[in-house]
Length: 251
Image (tube, rainbow, N blue to C red; front, side, top):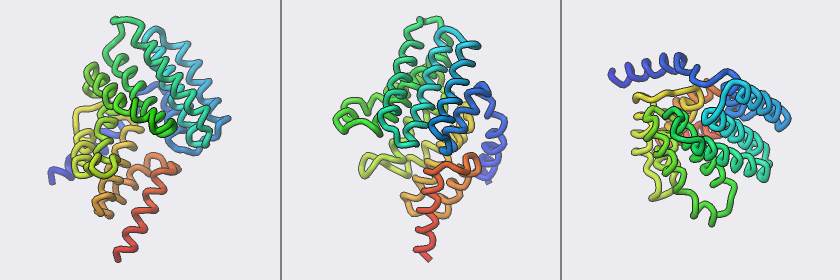
């Protein structure tokens, strides 16, 4: 009963907390997470978000938001198999986040948190695209910067997710799907600020962790929650197919 009540609270909260980002960032973000955006459309969304940021923000907040725009555009290029351009935008995003932090101590704690979060996110995606040697030298910086983000804003859901992800997705002895489920549920039901992309990330992670434990019906339930948010997301669709195949094979 407690779990059912917690789930209902989380689902109700889901819709009330989506409005954390400006509309011009939300639209760009949701298009990227839908994984159905061409490079041309991604560039158009980027230019609009970049323009709005420059017109409405300044100082540390401006650079942190510009960093997020570069990160999102990097994901568009990554999804369209344009590795070099993706790397370039992730690197630009990291530099802009560093510039946000360099603006001084006057920035709001949540802005500093976002800047460290964007550094962690950029490095995380570069780890998928750069050499093994680069990953060995820089991979630990993802968790390091996510923890710095939480020092300034303990409610930063994306930072919590990056730290918890190692237990869900880590191979072999580097991962622990049972712990991953506990960590992800702690984010979902905890005192953090969740937006639509964070719900997607946590639902998908819970689906993947349960799949690793052969808890396939539970896994399918979580992935379907992910797809309810972003129905065209290719990663979630692929996971759904894998899980459904495992369920059919087990019969």
